[in-house]
Image (cartoon, rainbow, N blue to C red; front, side, top):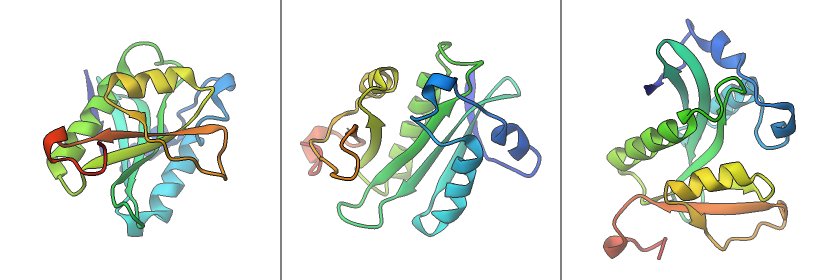
Length: 160
């Protein structure tokens, strides 16, 4: 069973050692880059999540807060190590992250930017309630911006 754990001085080398398959290299930053972004975005309340399965680190994610409108969460990076893909760990981890963000309750939505050709990631996000936000970024024309509402639709303002 996957659980979210903090990155510590005891496990950060294991986290930094995570790798995706060669065909996925253009979709997500290397794990060490994700750790560095967590530091760089510390003023945006960045949080690094490591995914642990029975004492083995299987993945990592970075969530930060947007510092411009509309305010919300930004799932900047999300990866499962190549040795652990296709086993449901990504789905479990994403569910846990969304639950944690809902409980934190600072914002009503989370966004993620995904390469359009990364159909596996798009499918995973859709399975967990993400959909196309309709936002188009001229700087990333090959990407899809997806959004997931963290509150019931009846009180949601951004995601309807």
